[in-house]
Image (cartoon, rainbow, N blue to C red; front, side, top):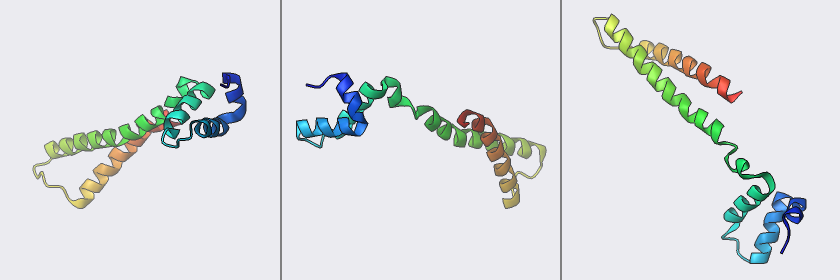
Length: 108
């Protein structure tokens, strides 16, 4: 049985290769990768990409919400509630800019 320090010296890939070779099964490689990553980098490393993923999910939601609010505001100010393709393009462009400005700060 190897110690934590010995696994750290092997590095992440060496650690996985060693454990998979010892176990003789490749079906547990993902689980072993998670264990090795936790041992080498800590639990925080398992969730390192969650923040960026959430920002990428939030962007389209914000865009849709802003588009609907703009469309409703424009529809209330007009007598004709039909929108031309140009109207939709302009409203969607504005919504995209707003969503990007809100989420860009979080990404960088």
